[in-house]
Length: 374
Image 1: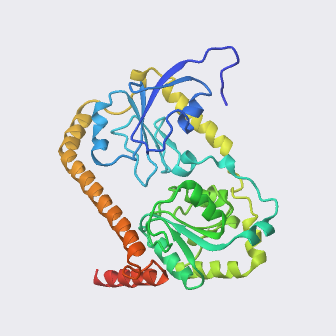
Image 2: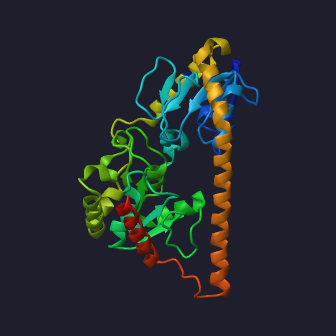
Image 3: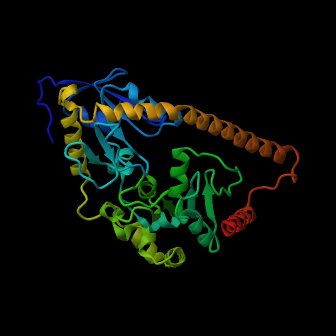
């Protein structure tokens, strides 16, 4: 790990961030923290090196052509690296592209894996749990793994579904805070941690939230996730021939307290995975970029291709704005419906039924009918 010696002035570097999610702290994050090991970092609006995320909505994406500085792309979603729009890219795919690419999936970017602490008494902690399993998502998965696992396990015990998707809590569909989610996960024996899509290398914070709060993860998504996490510490749905077999194993594990406590006590990380080494490699990649003169650090094509792309983006901009407008309108209607039902339940009890497992069964039947029609 290269660091400036004490008393020696570190070189200054001007960086910026655009299109990251609303909770992103531009002053304290993996990029600025790692760069500060070697550089005097200044975060500004007119940088030499701009880090561009993909958490944008609609038209924001098409402002790329205004960024003439060095662009470093980052994706936290199942999105491919774009070396025509960006000089460098940070993504989840297992590819090599001279000095322009670094593999850093969302899990390793958004989470501090050094936060995990082992349980002093796994048996006592397991006995203190008050919930069987929790599920917290805002939408269905591409593979159908999320809704399938809820349906299969709900036949055995109650699966507490927080969040907007498949919600069965008295409070109704809503987004819960990270602190509230951590408390729910810690109180649950199992946590359903299915990614929105299954792609090798694409692994997000979902499985880590379960490990961090000592709940056995039920995971589906990245088939290579065992390169990071201990296969003995979680239920990997990819190890089974069907979702039904995976659910049957979870039920068996829940009924065998000794086997459950053994899995709960396992260290989360795979043998051979070194988080500190990963951070050192990430630091070296970032330092290589910003240690160059900005013009020398440019890698993207600057002749025909960018001009054509900018014209294409300009054509798409009205469409993107319409998508933004439609999404905002739909969000307002969802909020009005939620609060309207809440008021009706309060002042006209019985008119609007309370959300319960019956409503969950109704959703599944309606979903099955829709699938048959397709």
